[in-house]
Image (spheres, rainbow, N blue to C red):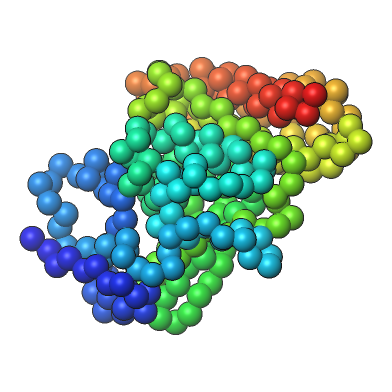
Length: 280
């Protein structure tokens, strides 16, 4: 059995990482599911007792989501409508036990192409704050998750927070997920949509698609087409943006690649329609 660390201070946790290369864990909702061993091997760093890593707060430049903030915390926090998609995703991340234990940072660090938290955070232009004994660096979420089970976190770094800039907290949002059932299921396809409409003109648009490639992706061509368009003309742009050309889903037991593409396009269409209907 390996050594178990549970420090109460961030500096102590960073010292453990710098000297041991221990594996950071929090809710462990995916850690145990990803191994057939009876116990975690090697040194383990439990970050759930670290002061200041849990909770959501407003800062002078945006919003800060602490690394050990749980999905239940996300659901229980009053947030602007742009965060609705993140809270809607939180309701579908496992059952209540998973939502009570699973953390926002853990969902990102797991690197799953079907991680429900990634598309909403992408659509919020989220950034990842990484701390080490050498200091803190901040990178865009799109540059953090780089492939299945792969991130750009160094072994001596710990994700300390997810940051959402004020400029992205505008408009209304919607998260839609297709699975074999409503809850406790891995996504076949999922979509997060955020639209800011002023005087019936879309002035900002973010559309992110998950489970349809090695990483979740922003539909940049569609976003560009939506900005400047009248709200009542938005639906027709989905078919002309050729989203299927940028989606690279696999075929597996949950669905064929062609089905995932078709499902993603339908979810994008529904997501845009749902957001626009919220305003009527």
